[in-house]
Image (tube, rainbow, N blue to C red; front, top):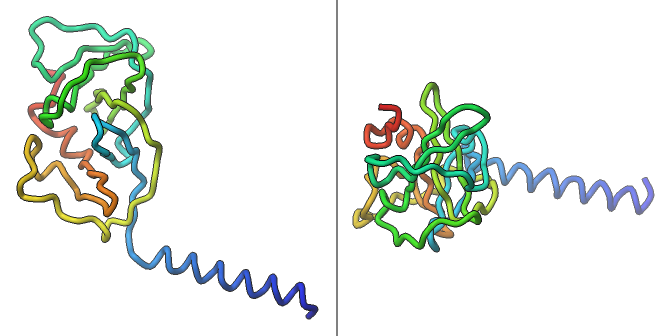
Length: 169
């Protein structure tokens, strides 16, 4: 084996070792990370069917305050919820810069408004911290945990199953 092959083999061993270390912490989830005001949130990507620009939002008179309106998504009417109102966050108004994250689980489907999409990332579930007991505006059962860098991971199944967010009634 020549010197170049030995170097390549050594590098390959290091890379294999790094991959094993990354897999050791345990289970992980793919998350769509987004912003609401200046706070970072995430929701498991298995509940996200797509992300859209906020446009053509139709307001619904008499709807609960957290329902921003409805959109026509390829011929299907989808309700859009403003999570800021449920989380007691400061509302700064909606623009076409906002995004709609369409959530779906079983028969339940609706959109939530985000100020910006950060992208997708992988989170190791055993690195999540429990939400603080002082957290206001959202039930603790809707939060899976908080990452070391402050991203609040929401439980998509709990949000979709919440009676208050059942916009199909």
